Image (cartoon, rainbow, N blue to C red; front, side):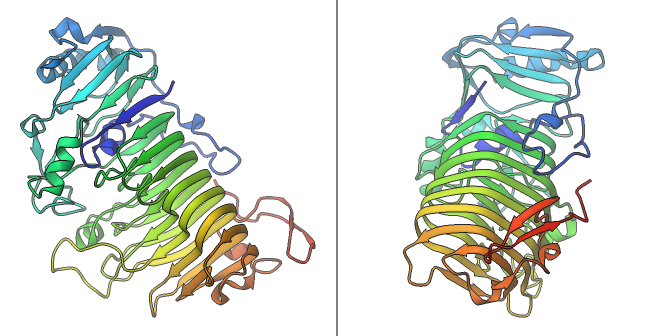
Length: 450
Protein backbone atom coordinates (compact mmCIF):
# COMPACT_ATOMS: atom_id res chain seq x y z
CA UNK A 1 0.00 0.00 0.00
CA UNK A 2 1.70 3.16 -1.16
CA UNK A 3 0.70 6.37 0.51
CA UNK A 4 1.12 9.61 -1.37
CA UNK A 5 2.13 12.97 0.03
CA UNK A 6 2.28 16.15 -2.00
CA UNK A 7 2.39 19.93 -1.77
CA UNK A 8 3.52 20.26 1.82
CA UNK A 9 4.23 23.48 3.67
CA UNK A 10 8.00 24.02 3.72
CA UNK A 11 9.33 20.72 5.05
CA UNK A 12 6.15 19.71 6.79
CA UNK A 13 6.29 16.73 4.44
CA UNK A 14 8.82 15.42 6.91
CA UNK A 15 6.88 16.10 10.03
CA UNK A 16 3.61 14.55 8.92
CA UNK A 17 5.20 11.16 8.80
CA UNK A 18 8.27 11.31 11.01
CA UNK A 19 6.63 13.13 13.90
CA UNK A 20 3.94 10.53 14.40
CA UNK A 21 5.08 7.05 13.49
CA UNK A 22 6.68 6.22 16.83
CA UNK A 23 6.67 2.46 17.32
CA UNK A 24 6.53 0.78 20.70
CA UNK A 25 9.20 -1.85 19.99
CA UNK A 26 12.92 -1.17 19.71
CA UNK A 27 15.37 -2.27 17.05
CA UNK A 28 16.17 -5.93 17.26
CA UNK A 29 19.73 -7.17 17.41
CA UNK A 30 19.71 -8.14 13.74
CA UNK A 31 20.91 -5.14 11.78
CA UNK A 32 22.83 -4.56 8.61
CA UNK A 33 23.11 -5.61 5.02
CA UNK A 34 21.95 -9.16 5.65
CA UNK A 35 18.55 -7.66 6.56
CA UNK A 36 17.83 -5.04 3.86
CA UNK A 37 14.32 -4.63 5.20
CA UNK A 38 12.39 -2.82 7.92
CA UNK A 39 10.44 -6.01 8.68
CA UNK A 40 12.21 -6.48 12.01
CA UNK A 41 10.85 -3.11 13.13
CA UNK A 42 7.17 -3.95 12.77
CA UNK A 43 5.13 -2.31 15.53
CA UNK A 44 4.52 -4.68 18.41
CA UNK A 45 0.91 -3.76 19.02
CA UNK A 46 -2.16 -5.99 19.24
CA UNK A 47 -5.10 -5.50 16.86
CA UNK A 48 -6.98 -2.31 17.65
CA UNK A 49 -9.81 -2.83 20.11
CA UNK A 50 -12.33 -0.90 18.07
CA UNK A 51 -12.78 1.42 15.12
CA UNK A 52 -14.51 4.78 14.85
CA UNK A 53 -15.28 6.92 11.81
CA UNK A 54 -14.26 10.55 11.70
CA UNK A 55 -17.80 11.30 10.48
CA UNK A 56 -19.13 10.07 13.82
CA UNK A 57 -17.71 13.26 15.33
CA UNK A 58 -19.14 15.69 12.79
CA UNK A 59 -16.37 15.75 10.17
CA UNK A 60 -17.47 16.62 6.64
CA UNK A 61 -15.40 15.53 3.64
CA UNK A 62 -16.37 18.29 1.23
CA UNK A 63 -12.93 19.95 1.01
CA UNK A 64 -14.38 23.18 2.45
CA UNK A 65 -15.48 22.46 6.01
CA UNK A 66 -12.66 22.78 8.54
CA UNK A 67 -12.53 19.51 10.48
CA UNK A 68 -9.74 20.18 12.99
CA UNK A 69 -11.98 20.11 16.04
CA UNK A 70 -13.93 17.06 14.85
CA UNK A 71 -10.70 15.11 14.27
CA UNK A 72 -9.29 16.20 17.62
CA UNK A 73 -12.51 15.21 19.38
CA UNK A 74 -12.36 11.77 17.77
CA UNK A 75 -8.76 11.27 18.89
CA UNK A 76 -9.51 12.33 22.43
CA UNK A 77 -12.49 9.98 22.48
CA UNK A 78 -10.42 6.94 21.50
CA UNK A 79 -7.60 7.85 23.90
CA UNK A 80 -9.45 5.85 26.51
CA UNK A 81 -8.81 2.66 24.55
CA UNK A 82 -5.05 2.82 25.14
CA UNK A 83 -5.15 0.08 27.78
CA UNK A 84 -7.34 -2.15 25.60
CA UNK A 85 -5.07 -2.34 22.56
CA UNK A 86 -5.83 1.09 21.15
CA UNK A 87 -8.27 2.17 18.47
CA UNK A 88 -8.49 3.06 14.78
CA UNK A 89 -9.75 6.37 13.43
CA UNK A 90 -11.01 5.82 9.89
CA UNK A 91 -11.30 8.42 7.13
CA UNK A 92 -13.79 7.32 4.44
CA UNK A 93 -13.76 8.71 0.87
CA UNK A 94 -13.77 12.50 0.84
CA UNK A 95 -11.59 15.59 1.05
CA UNK A 96 -10.96 16.23 4.73
CA UNK A 97 -9.76 19.80 5.34
CA UNK A 98 -7.95 20.31 8.65
CA UNK A 99 -5.45 22.36 10.56
CA UNK A 100 -2.81 20.81 12.79
CA UNK A 101 -4.05 18.16 15.20
CA UNK A 102 -2.36 16.14 17.93
CA UNK A 103 -2.16 12.38 18.34
CA UNK A 104 -2.23 10.10 21.36
CA UNK A 105 -0.52 6.74 21.86
CA UNK A 106 -1.92 3.44 20.60
CA UNK A 107 -3.84 4.87 17.66
CA UNK A 108 -4.08 4.05 13.97
CA UNK A 109 -5.13 6.63 11.39
CA UNK A 110 -6.51 4.66 8.44
CA UNK A 111 -7.46 6.29 5.14
CA UNK A 112 -9.66 4.90 2.38
CA UNK A 113 -7.93 4.93 -1.01
CA UNK A 114 -10.18 7.82 -2.10
CA UNK A 115 -9.61 9.85 1.06
CA UNK A 116 -7.56 13.05 0.86
CA UNK A 117 -6.35 14.85 3.99
CA UNK A 118 -5.99 18.55 3.15
CA UNK A 119 -3.90 20.96 5.19
CA UNK A 120 -5.52 24.30 5.84
CA UNK A 121 -4.09 27.30 3.98
CA UNK A 122 -4.78 29.55 6.98
CA UNK A 123 -1.71 29.81 9.20
CA UNK A 124 -3.95 30.41 12.22
CA UNK A 125 -4.99 26.75 11.97
CA UNK A 126 -1.39 25.68 12.68
CA UNK A 127 -0.57 26.38 16.37
CA UNK A 128 2.75 27.96 17.27
CA UNK A 129 4.91 26.04 19.75
CA UNK A 130 8.34 26.41 21.34
CA UNK A 131 11.46 25.68 19.28
CA UNK A 132 13.31 22.44 19.76
CA UNK A 133 15.90 22.69 22.55
CA UNK A 134 18.49 21.25 20.14
CA UNK A 135 17.94 24.19 17.77
CA UNK A 136 17.30 27.05 20.19
CA UNK A 137 15.16 28.89 17.64
CA UNK A 138 13.15 28.26 14.52
CA UNK A 139 15.15 26.89 11.64
CA UNK A 140 14.01 29.36 8.98
CA UNK A 141 13.27 32.23 11.35
CA UNK A 142 14.18 33.25 14.91
CA UNK A 143 11.64 32.41 17.57
CA UNK A 144 9.03 29.68 17.73
CA UNK A 145 7.72 27.22 15.13
CA UNK A 146 4.44 26.05 13.65
CA UNK A 147 3.20 22.67 14.80
CA UNK A 148 3.14 20.02 12.07
CA UNK A 149 -0.07 18.95 10.38
CA UNK A 150 -0.16 15.60 12.20
CA UNK A 151 1.64 16.08 15.50
CA UNK A 152 2.62 13.78 18.32
CA UNK A 153 4.61 14.49 21.48
CA UNK A 154 5.84 11.58 23.62
CA UNK A 155 3.53 9.17 21.80
CA UNK A 156 4.16 5.53 20.96
CA UNK A 157 2.53 2.76 18.93
CA UNK A 158 1.14 5.10 16.27
CA UNK A 159 0.37 3.93 12.74
CA UNK A 160 -0.68 5.93 9.68
CA UNK A 161 -1.81 3.80 6.78
CA UNK A 162 -3.87 4.02 3.61
CA UNK A 163 -4.44 2.15 0.36
CA UNK A 164 -2.73 4.78 -1.81
CA UNK A 165 -4.52 7.59 0.00
CA UNK A 166 -3.22 11.16 -0.19
CA UNK A 167 -2.05 13.67 2.40
CA UNK A 168 -1.86 17.09 0.75
CA UNK A 169 -0.50 19.96 2.82
CA UNK A 170 -1.47 22.54 0.15
CA UNK A 171 1.95 24.07 0.50
CA UNK A 172 1.84 26.67 -2.27
CA UNK A 173 0.60 29.39 0.03
CA UNK A 174 3.39 28.63 2.52
CA UNK A 175 6.03 28.71 -0.20
CA UNK A 176 4.68 32.06 -1.39
CA UNK A 177 5.00 33.41 2.15
CA UNK A 178 8.57 32.08 2.29
CA UNK A 179 9.58 33.67 -1.03
CA UNK A 180 7.80 36.95 -0.18
CA UNK A 181 9.44 37.02 3.28
CA UNK A 182 6.05 37.12 4.99
CA UNK A 183 6.38 33.72 6.68
CA UNK A 184 5.79 34.23 10.38
CA UNK A 185 7.23 31.10 12.06
CA UNK A 186 9.14 27.97 11.16
CA UNK A 187 8.80 24.15 11.36
CA UNK A 188 9.09 21.16 13.87
CA UNK A 189 10.60 17.48 14.57
CA UNK A 190 12.20 14.79 16.96
CA UNK A 191 11.35 11.07 17.15
CA UNK A 192 12.45 7.49 17.94
CA UNK A 193 11.62 4.04 16.59
CA UNK A 194 10.05 4.89 13.25
CA UNK A 195 9.24 2.91 10.12
CA UNK A 196 8.62 4.91 6.93
CA UNK A 197 7.56 2.50 4.21
CA UNK A 198 6.04 2.57 0.71
CA UNK A 199 5.60 6.33 0.52
CA UNK A 200 5.51 8.58 -2.53
CA UNK A 201 6.48 12.13 -1.53
CA UNK A 202 6.06 14.85 -4.14
CA UNK A 203 6.67 18.60 -4.02
CA UNK A 204 7.49 21.04 -6.84
CA UNK A 205 11.15 21.44 -7.75
CA UNK A 206 11.11 25.10 -6.78
CA UNK A 207 9.43 24.61 -3.41
CA UNK A 208 11.74 25.74 -0.58
CA UNK A 209 12.86 23.44 2.26
CA UNK A 210 10.70 20.52 1.18
CA UNK A 211 12.87 17.69 2.46
CA UNK A 212 11.27 14.28 2.15
CA UNK A 213 12.17 12.67 5.49
CA UNK A 214 14.36 14.23 8.20
CA UNK A 215 15.36 11.96 11.09
CA UNK A 216 16.54 14.60 13.57
CA UNK A 217 18.00 13.57 16.95
CA UNK A 218 16.27 10.28 16.22
CA UNK A 219 17.08 6.66 17.06
CA UNK A 220 16.06 3.46 15.34
CA UNK A 221 14.62 4.79 12.08
CA UNK A 222 14.00 2.59 9.03
CA UNK A 223 13.00 4.00 5.64
CA UNK A 224 12.32 1.65 2.75
CA UNK A 225 10.73 1.41 -0.69
CA UNK A 226 10.02 5.13 -1.06
CA UNK A 227 9.96 7.44 -4.08
CA UNK A 228 10.64 11.14 -3.53
CA UNK A 229 10.56 14.02 -6.01
CA UNK A 230 10.94 17.39 -4.35
CA UNK A 231 12.66 20.74 -4.06
CA UNK A 232 15.22 19.77 -1.42
CA UNK A 233 16.87 16.64 0.04
CA UNK A 234 15.21 13.24 -0.06
CA UNK A 235 16.47 12.14 3.37
CA UNK A 236 18.48 14.48 5.62
CA UNK A 237 19.81 13.06 8.90
CA UNK A 238 20.33 15.74 11.54
CA UNK A 239 20.89 16.15 15.30
CA UNK A 240 20.73 19.77 16.42
CA UNK A 241 22.26 23.12 15.60
CA UNK A 242 25.62 24.35 16.93
CA UNK A 243 25.77 25.10 20.67
CA UNK A 244 22.13 24.08 21.16
CA UNK A 245 22.67 20.66 19.60
CA UNK A 246 25.94 20.17 21.51
CA UNK A 247 24.28 21.07 24.80
CA UNK A 248 21.18 18.97 24.14
CA UNK A 249 23.45 16.05 23.23
CA UNK A 250 20.96 13.79 21.52
CA UNK A 251 22.46 12.05 18.45
CA UNK A 252 20.79 10.39 15.51
CA UNK A 253 21.83 6.74 15.43
CA UNK A 254 20.86 3.45 13.87
CA UNK A 255 19.29 4.90 10.73
CA UNK A 256 18.51 2.38 7.96
CA UNK A 257 17.51 3.38 4.41
CA UNK A 258 16.65 0.70 1.83
CA UNK A 259 15.60 1.12 -1.79
CA UNK A 260 15.12 4.87 -1.98
CA UNK A 261 14.54 6.31 -5.47
CA UNK A 262 14.13 9.90 -6.51
CA UNK A 263 15.14 13.17 -8.11
CA UNK A 264 15.39 16.59 -6.56
CA UNK A 265 16.84 20.07 -6.60
CA UNK A 266 19.34 19.08 -3.91
CA UNK A 267 20.59 15.64 -2.84
CA UNK A 268 19.53 12.05 -2.26
CA UNK A 269 20.85 11.07 1.18
CA UNK A 270 22.37 13.83 3.32
CA UNK A 271 23.97 13.95 6.74
CA UNK A 272 23.85 17.46 8.22
CA UNK A 273 24.37 20.23 8.12
CA UNK A 274 22.75 20.53 11.57
CA UNK A 275 24.44 17.51 13.19
CA UNK A 276 25.92 18.93 16.39
CA UNK A 277 24.55 16.13 18.58
CA UNK A 278 26.29 13.53 16.43
CA UNK A 279 25.26 11.03 13.73
CA UNK A 280 26.36 7.39 13.66
CA UNK A 281 25.41 3.88 12.54
CA UNK A 282 23.85 4.85 9.24
CA UNK A 283 23.14 2.10 6.68
CA UNK A 284 22.00 2.95 3.15
CA UNK A 285 21.46 0.34 0.44
CA UNK A 286 19.65 0.37 -2.89
CA UNK A 287 19.86 4.12 -3.52
CA UNK A 288 18.85 5.38 -7.00
CA UNK A 289 19.22 9.11 -7.64
CA UNK A 290 18.48 10.82 -10.96
CA UNK A 291 18.55 14.38 -12.32
CA UNK A 292 19.86 15.96 -9.13
CA UNK A 293 22.79 18.16 -8.08
CA UNK A 294 24.25 15.51 -5.71
CA UNK A 295 23.51 11.95 -4.62
CA UNK A 296 25.45 11.31 -1.37
CA UNK A 297 26.28 14.33 0.77
CA UNK A 298 27.80 15.16 4.15
CA UNK A 299 27.35 18.83 5.07
CA UNK A 300 29.34 20.49 7.81
CA UNK A 301 30.79 23.80 8.83
CA UNK A 302 33.12 25.08 11.60
CA UNK A 303 31.13 25.63 14.77
CA UNK A 304 28.93 22.57 14.42
CA UNK A 305 30.98 20.27 16.63
CA UNK A 306 29.55 16.78 16.94
CA UNK A 307 30.59 13.82 14.82
CA UNK A 308 29.69 11.71 11.80
CA UNK A 309 30.95 8.16 12.08
CA UNK A 310 30.17 4.58 11.13
CA UNK A 311 28.34 5.15 7.86
CA UNK A 312 27.86 2.36 5.32
CA UNK A 313 26.43 3.12 1.84
CA UNK A 314 26.24 0.53 -0.95
CA UNK A 315 24.36 -0.55 -4.06
CA UNK A 316 23.99 2.94 -5.50
CA UNK A 317 22.91 4.03 -9.01
CA UNK A 318 23.23 7.68 -10.05
CA UNK A 319 22.34 9.24 -13.40
CA UNK A 320 22.47 12.85 -14.58
CA UNK A 321 23.93 14.08 -11.31
CA UNK A 322 26.35 17.01 -11.07
CA UNK A 323 28.47 15.70 -8.15
CA UNK A 324 27.96 12.10 -7.10
CA UNK A 325 29.69 12.22 -3.68
CA UNK A 326 30.07 15.55 -1.90
CA UNK A 327 31.57 16.23 1.53
CA UNK A 328 30.98 19.96 2.01
CA UNK A 329 32.90 21.60 4.87
CA UNK A 330 31.37 25.09 4.51
CA UNK A 331 27.63 24.58 4.43
CA UNK A 332 24.93 26.34 6.42
CA UNK A 333 24.52 29.29 8.70
CA UNK A 334 24.54 29.56 12.51
CA UNK A 335 21.65 30.23 14.92
CA UNK A 336 23.40 33.19 16.50
CA UNK A 337 26.75 34.69 17.38
CA UNK A 338 27.49 32.46 20.36
CA UNK A 339 28.77 29.38 18.55
CA UNK A 340 32.38 28.26 18.91
CA UNK A 341 34.09 28.51 15.49
CA UNK A 342 36.78 26.12 16.73
CA UNK A 343 34.22 23.34 17.29
CA UNK A 344 35.05 21.20 14.27
CA UNK A 345 33.01 18.07 13.52
CA UNK A 346 34.77 14.71 13.72
CA UNK A 347 34.25 12.58 10.58
CA UNK A 348 35.50 9.00 10.40
CA UNK A 349 34.67 5.50 9.24
CA UNK A 350 32.66 6.25 6.09
CA UNK A 351 32.36 3.34 3.62
CA UNK A 352 30.87 3.81 0.14
CA UNK A 353 30.89 0.81 -2.19
CA UNK A 354 29.22 -0.72 -5.22
CA UNK A 355 28.35 2.53 -6.97
CA UNK A 356 27.70 3.05 -10.69
CA UNK A 357 26.83 6.28 -12.47
CA UNK A 358 26.38 7.88 -15.90
CA UNK A 359 25.97 11.50 -16.87
CA UNK A 360 28.12 12.58 -13.92
CA UNK A 361 30.15 15.78 -14.04
CA UNK A 362 32.24 15.35 -10.85
CA UNK A 363 32.71 11.93 -9.26
CA UNK A 364 33.64 13.24 -5.84
CA UNK A 365 34.35 16.52 -4.05
CA UNK A 366 35.57 15.66 -0.54
CA UNK A 367 36.50 18.60 1.69
CA UNK A 368 37.72 18.00 5.23
CA UNK A 369 38.99 20.52 7.78
CA UNK A 370 42.57 21.63 8.03
CA UNK A 371 43.95 20.16 11.23
CA UNK A 372 40.95 17.84 11.54
CA UNK A 373 41.16 15.46 8.59
CA UNK A 374 38.28 13.15 7.80
CA UNK A 375 39.64 9.67 8.56
CA UNK A 376 39.05 6.17 7.21
CA UNK A 377 37.06 7.25 4.17
CA UNK A 378 36.76 4.09 2.06
CA UNK A 379 35.60 3.74 -1.53
CA UNK A 380 35.30 0.35 -3.21
CA UNK A 381 33.92 -0.82 -6.55
CA UNK A 382 32.89 2.69 -7.62
CA UNK A 383 32.50 3.40 -11.36
CA UNK A 384 31.34 6.90 -12.27
CA UNK A 385 31.46 8.07 -15.87
CA UNK A 386 32.45 11.64 -15.05
CA UNK A 387 33.03 14.35 -17.64
CA UNK A 388 35.18 16.72 -15.56
CA UNK A 389 38.91 16.84 -16.26
CA UNK A 390 39.32 16.63 -12.47
CA UNK A 391 36.74 13.99 -11.53
CA UNK A 392 37.98 13.74 -7.91
CA UNK A 393 38.94 16.68 -5.71
CA UNK A 394 39.98 15.90 -2.15
CA UNK A 395 41.42 17.98 0.68
CA UNK A 396 42.11 17.09 4.32
CA UNK A 397 40.75 13.58 4.00
CA UNK A 398 42.49 10.26 4.55
CA UNK A 399 41.39 6.80 3.60
CA UNK A 400 41.56 3.82 1.27
CA UNK A 401 40.08 2.58 -1.98
CA UNK A 402 39.87 -0.25 -4.47
CA UNK A 403 38.36 -0.72 -7.92
CA UNK A 404 37.52 2.97 -8.35
CA UNK A 405 37.12 4.55 -11.79
CA UNK A 406 38.10 7.18 -12.70
CA UNK A 407 41.23 6.99 -10.59
CA UNK A 408 40.60 8.37 -7.13
CA UNK A 409 42.37 11.33 -5.52
CA UNK A 410 45.76 10.87 -3.91
CA UNK A 411 44.66 10.93 -0.22
CA UNK A 412 42.46 7.88 -0.86
CA UNK A 413 44.85 5.82 -2.97
CA UNK A 414 45.92 3.59 -0.13
CA UNK A 415 44.60 0.12 -0.94
CA UNK A 416 41.92 -1.39 1.23
CA UNK A 417 43.11 -4.94 0.71
CA UNK A 418 44.73 -6.84 2.16
CA UNK A 419 45.81 -4.73 5.14
CA UNK A 420 43.26 -1.96 5.65
CA UNK A 421 39.82 -3.53 5.29
CA UNK A 422 39.41 -3.41 9.07
CA UNK A 423 39.85 0.38 8.94
CA UNK A 424 36.80 0.62 6.69
CA UNK A 425 33.47 0.58 8.48
CA UNK A 426 31.53 -2.64 7.96
CA UNK A 427 33.48 -3.33 4.78
CA UNK A 428 32.65 -7.01 4.22
CA UNK A 429 31.32 -10.08 5.90
CA UNK A 430 32.82 -13.53 5.69
CA UNK A 431 33.76 -14.44 2.14
CA UNK A 432 35.88 -13.64 -0.89
CA UNK A 433 36.57 -10.26 -2.41
CA UNK A 434 38.53 -9.31 -5.52
CA UNK A 435 41.23 -6.63 -5.74
CA UNK A 436 42.45 -4.60 -8.71
CA UNK A 437 45.15 -7.22 -9.24
CA UNK A 438 42.46 -9.94 -9.54
CA UNK A 439 43.68 -11.52 -6.35
CA UNK A 440 41.07 -13.16 -4.19
CA UNK A 441 41.18 -12.74 -0.44
CA UNK A 442 39.22 -14.76 2.07
CA UNK A 443 38.53 -12.52 5.04
CA UNK A 444 36.81 -13.20 8.30
CA UNK A 445 34.71 -10.34 9.53
CA UNK A 446 36.07 -9.97 13.02
CA UNK A 447 33.59 -7.42 14.40
CA UNK A 448 30.08 -8.35 13.30
CA UNK A 449 27.16 -6.09 14.07
CA UNK A 450 25.16 -6.94 17.13
